[in-house]
Length: 370
View 1: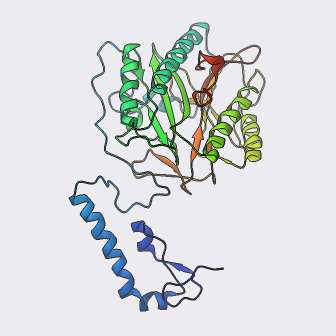
View 2: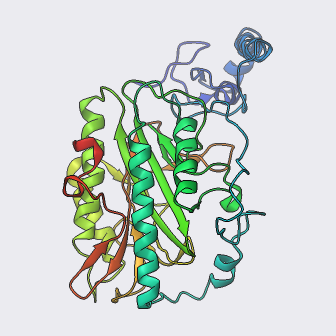
View 3: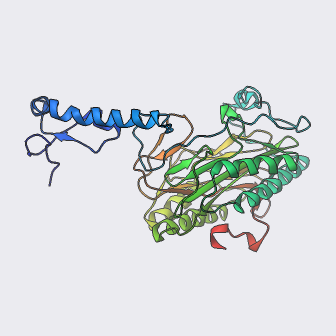
């Protein structure tokens, strides 16, 4: 059965663009003539919606993007300004002040995958271990009622206590010390004052900068009582990462990582995000290689001993499409369904790989399986 015309009850083929812009339930009409004939009564809905927004703003509601059409139920909340109280003695990356990662920009296009020296590998091991320590502290705070900004503040302090710089802070202008992505947010969610709710899934993405090296990892957590479909999604996103890590060894092709992930995720009934990928990491936060998570990609490069990179597949409950909130950071699913992700920083060794950011307890299992 087709969509019904609001005006005459016939089969509709047009959607009111203003309703879509205001985030109202879809209104459809059979043609332009019918739309114009019913315009006077229909536009009253627009006025009512606009008045409701204005009333909410007058009462102090936080509605930063009143005309933006959200794909899901999550909304941004107020947040504090970017922290600038980092102790002077902590070494900073080149972008800490103006947001521009000059070293990354200058290296872009070279495409060369660096083989790290022994000293550089030790630097990466330290950064990875400290990044995991910070993640463990963040994990201890995940529960109903805690805000993601409270988690971010704890991440900032944990970095300071370890003489680390929180790598996301002011990276290309990002305003916080970690990314917190709730429900339909795929990645790069900005911590704010929204309390976590029973049934949420939450991804925390942490990177620390220590003695010139970055250690990057993320993990998805279950908040309270998560439904079966949500738990299955989180399970699948972790399992596909583990399957991908198992393929890492000298001589493996970077493009084949996505084949392993896509093949498994297809059997689980979920989809793989295509817009974001794993990346090389060392003294640079993001560098070669690019590691796509979907099949039949065109990634270049062969893994060699001493390569260091991340794998971080983003798995969607519905379709693989993504879109951005107007903050130009928060990536969300286009259908409003949930997304889950896990990430590790990996070092290629003679016999396979070393997980530099793995959990040190419970044989490395993720927190959602505790």
